[in-house]
Length: 394
Ligand SMILES: Nc1ncnc2c1ncn2[C@@H]1O[C@H](COP(=O)(O)OP(=O)(O)OP(=O)(O)O)[C@@H](O)[C@H]1O
Ligand SMILES: [Mg+2]
Image (cartoon, helix red, strand yellow):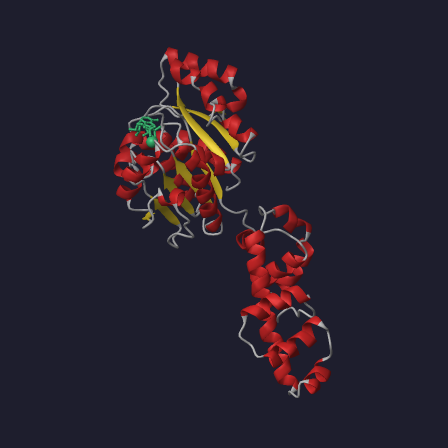
């Protein structure tokens, strides 16, 4: 069953008519029916045509009009809004219950002025909130961004059962190496740099996909100026939107330098997680993390990406020394609101040989088959649960 479009306006008729190679007679029939709103029998008689044929012309033209409306809508679509869908939930559910397709419901909504994308509507109908993007960011190197990215990806895919996309923007390729070695994720044909430099419309249809780092191309971006930033961020945004219905979570691992790869990631992400180490230098760096001129999280929230939410700073490589214990206490006192609260105090990951071992083998830390792995996992799991629930994917 299709919704029946009874009338269309002259401008739309002319636009659609100019694009189809129909005879004047056929267009005359359709014009009389759809623009002038005359009765079928009368129009058929006036054009010396059987009513069934006139009706067929009408249906075929309506399909073209629907396509045209859809194309116009997609071109002019403002940012999608779940709110607009919620407001019209009753109508949407009625159409769905009557068997209308997603495309038809979209057409109907757009006629009523609602601004939503097809993927947003699909997610809404299926009760899914759409893909959430989390970026690992810290300008300090070696703090565990890649280890957390990989282990969090394994947790969300293998334990929580989410469809996970990992993008590795770091030319050092640490996440890519671990995920490739593990052989659990599908390595995409599309290298990570391409979603910044080009318009990419989709990836492999798999539940766990890696866009691996491509060394030379990504390294080149370190020296790209600000002028490239808009293009890169808008390409990345368009890509994430294109795969919005295909994944539940996108995890972006970044390089430790504050360049356009980090900036573009923060501009498009929903969440940011910052592993840190408990030394004075790293703690002093928290100010930069928040207020850095170009990639400070607060700067980005206040200007270009107000939806960005800091999940928190995650102390990693924590050692059981009095010095580190003191640092952790000081950190919690000074930055309590930035810490990740679990049921068991603030989240922190101890230094453990299990993590580099799991990363080298490319496997989840809980599958290491060693006491050290089980111990590490017992500590990491509540942290990951908290992260997943903050992201709304648990
Ligand atoms: N909790 C931990 N205990 C022991 N080793 C760890 C822990 N977390 C990470 N590591 C190891 O520390 C090293 C640095 O971690 P990782 O590569 O994840 O840091 P990074 O922040 O991604 O670094 P970069 O900024 O250079 O990309 C790796 O060898 C990793 O396996
Ligand atoms: Mg890394």
